[in-house]
Image 1 (cartoon, one colour):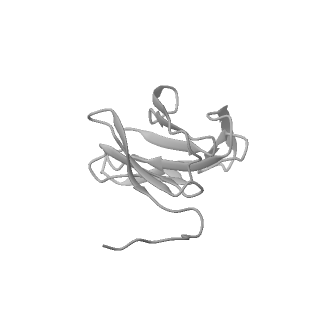
Image 2 (spheres, helix red, strand yellow; image 1 turned 30 degrees about the horizontal axis):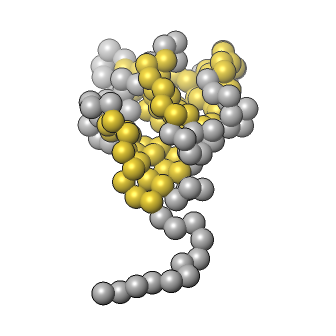
Image 3 (cartoon, one colour; image 1 turned 30 degrees about the vertical axis):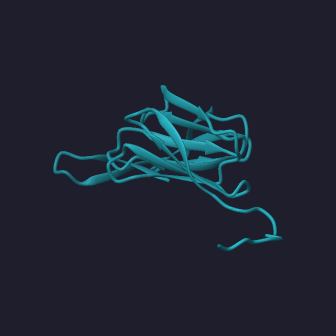
Length: 137
């Protein structure tokens, strides 16, 4: 992921390339020098998602241990943390930056974290094995 800042004439200028690792590290790679400026531990397990909110007010990270974290844009402050209880495969933030959709592919679950109401709701549960029976009425 590339982090941008705006210049005086409203043009976007790249600052950092963010790279995550399987052991929970976040690398800050300077876009211009290509040097690693900083490395921080942001999760305990493999990071599956790093995404910026459309309003550029926060970042969302998620890991295979089911932990979803919301960070300030400089990653200095952890704003919120949710333990979903299931391995997270991917997340996405809606256009209004007030909901986060969470996919747990191994568990067959899609959930939504509503940031305004602080609620976490399962939207879809799917089967993880063969269906052996069906009753139709």
